[in-house]
Image (cartoon, rainbow, N blue to C red; front, top):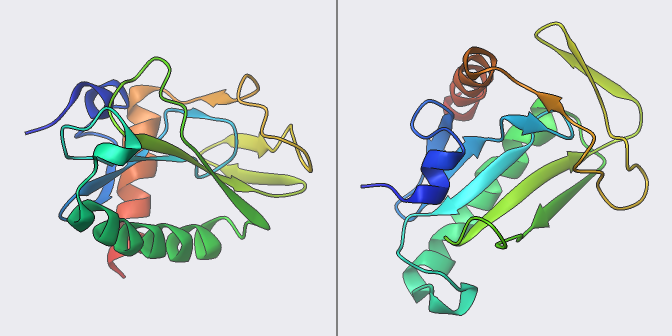
Length: 144
């Protein structure tokens, strides 16, 4: 079973990994290379509505995300943004932050907001096929 927020971000095509309570998805609009969305599987519309088990399991998801992006993107900082204004299910936008550019799939990814707040409006919009390919690449790295 899934929720509208996960589907909006391309689930199941953009799935990188999952834990018992969380999905890790590629964010199709990439303000920085490797941008992800961490979506809770529980039916929660507020952070405080999560169960203790979901909070505990979030540690496992975050550990996996940071290990994956540290090796794949070589980020200098990482931002977790909870922006639940449009998509109501509990989720975080995960943005690896870095100075300079990263290259992937024929695209160049700059962190336009570096070193300040992330510039979400400045992004590379991946096609469905490109988002699926990035998800598959990241999923393979997650498992290794």
